[in-house]
Length: 115
Image (cartoon, rainbow, N blue to C red; front, side):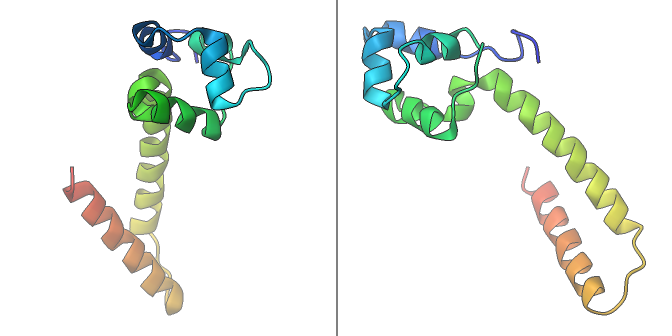
């Protein structure tokens, strides 16, 4: 992933709030003062707890704070889901496994129609 893909809006929201990186790190509970800086520069991905911390502070969904990361993750997920759906559609299983496969294909149908 390059810097464009990892772009975040953390710095924008921090500057708008008037918080310093040190203030923000303390509020989230980071032990290392550089964590906020590294997250803003996309050198390091925040932990799940850190990402939720940013969301709670700014009241902006994580996917909107980190649109590049979200887009990259989403693209990979969609590709792997499409592979699985194709594999299941070609499946010739029987018995209980057939019921599970049918339920999963039904879920795929519901998911695809909810867009």
